[in-house]
Length: 230
Image 1 (tube, rainbow, N blue to C red):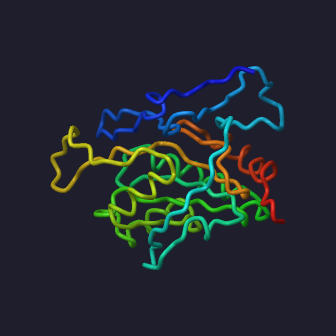
Image 2 (cartoon, rainbow, N blue to C red):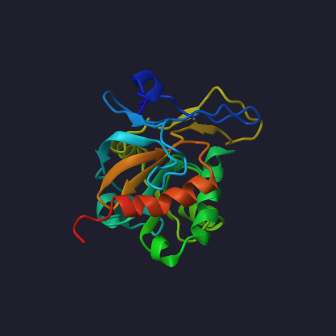
Image 3 (cartoon, helix red, strand yellow):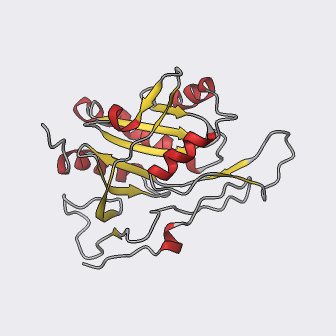
């Protein structure tokens, strides 16, 4: 089996939003010593093979607290205990990566059986709290699936959450130009992080993951790494 090792430089690639000439990139992992393993030798039809890149060394679920859209504190680790949790950092004005990820997940969630969706949480954390009000976040997420959870917070608390999740911190892209007042783009991590019920990350899902990949992997992630206390 051939392993693809992500160097620190490769792991820190970020997605920079552009208007009509968007540059797309994937943030895979942050820090030294973390690796992604994608077997090129296993047959694609093998039922145990994930479609998303699987980590050779699992990463622990982080502790951080942000705000739910009703203004109450949301303890990420506590609230997601025992669930398959798909975490994504993005913003509602994103021209492509964010709506595509959410649209793909929304379409797949609608097709999954209740026995799977009741054990799944999709969490979208805004990286643009100035424009992403709780009302806008709720309306935007409802367009994909009403079960999706939106989180916000201060710039400081969002930076802590991103660091805890081992993704590069988001930033306002001052190199992009816009003719509209108040319009700007955010550079942010482009991967969905999958925390399995055992409170570990075994796989991450970069930009380009398709609906068929999610449909295959979501039940498999629950099956392979269940809650060890049950």
